[in-house]
Image (tube, rainbow, N blue to C red; front, side, top):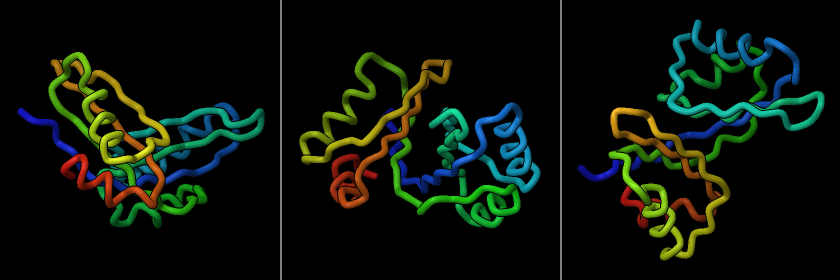
Length: 137
């Protein structure tokens, strides 16, 4: 079965780098009915942490994030890929982008178990159209 490639909305938000802040923000999103298909959180400095959020649906997400006390940066487009795990699964997608002249900004990937994997590819927004065509999204 071929990989499924979907264009997704990617949001970033800075939060205090303090114990419990991530749990607080994510609990508020959960309580608002937001389902995230991808999330990364990391310290960006001693005082700040960064959340990278990809909601299953962007409908109502900004409102829920605001209610959760998150100040979202400008929405970006990324690509969510999932499929059967095998050696080189992510390399195949990156190769398609390289052949199209698209320089990837970042990629996050993980094995999901049950022989499945998922990846999110972030890239310069000026290259979204080329990436869409190259990945068949």
